[in-house]
Image (cartoon, one colour):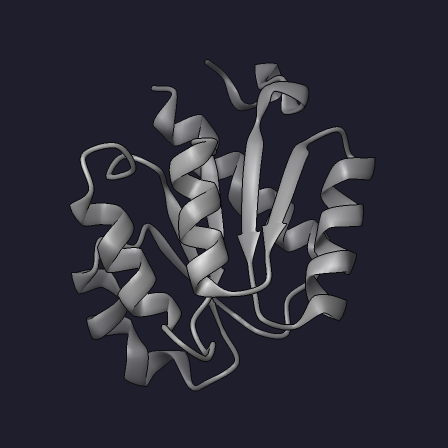
Length: 133
């Protein structure tokens, strides 16, 4: 399916970040653009949501309490029900120090914070287009 033919209304995004202000902004942006966007404000809640309503793509912050995004990504990639979901990890840390560890978990893309919602949407469309080929 060509990228310009993607139906954003059919793309389900799960955004997991422990900062409610960020999840609200991203959820509003993607919802206004026509995507189906759900959020989880902790890794534990996000993992449950990913298993209960399989998304097309997961946007996942790395630094969170309880369980970090790298560990959560690893759990998603080890579970047969969620292993094929593309995962985009988001980090406010120096990405070059995390990149090797991140990609070992099966992460599809590492995005440095701060990011614009437009850039994030571009990455989601790219990942969804690649997954449909």
